[in-house]
Length: 188
Figure 1: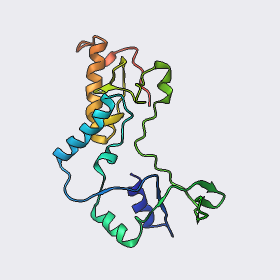
Figure 2: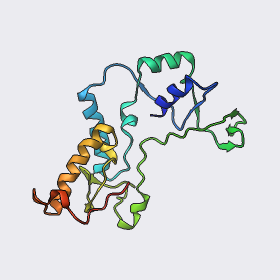
Figure 3: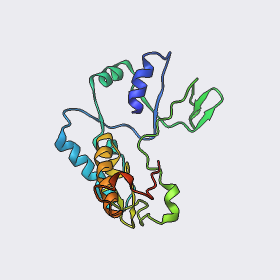
């Protein structure tokens, strides 16, 4: 999404600077259902082992669209490494480089924000939360939709439906009570 924002902003801004923590990996060529399933499976394997998930994009790479190819040709996708500090008029690097900036758009990506769950002691030795589907292995009452392989639009939609069915089963919901289940907390 950060690249999508950059492409749109570059159309109206006097100047843009693209900064990332790691060099981006672009993927050229088709990306179909088979490749998508393989990418999600790689992320799913990490969370099954209790490791922190990687984003789906870290596995798939960024798709090189026609718009991105044009932006690369124009120099819009010339990436700089992450700056060291924000200054009153822009950003600066340890090597003395400085870029003036009126606005900083900080696209955080699909980062798992799970620190608030620390009291539940769900983390494994690897630092992540082991999940089966969306259910935390250490506490089946906790479902993490948008964590690991479900951290994509398609994945989250599927995972959300699956989580609802599992929660309904956990609560012993019948068809008559599915819509009025009690004591379910939803956090974001």
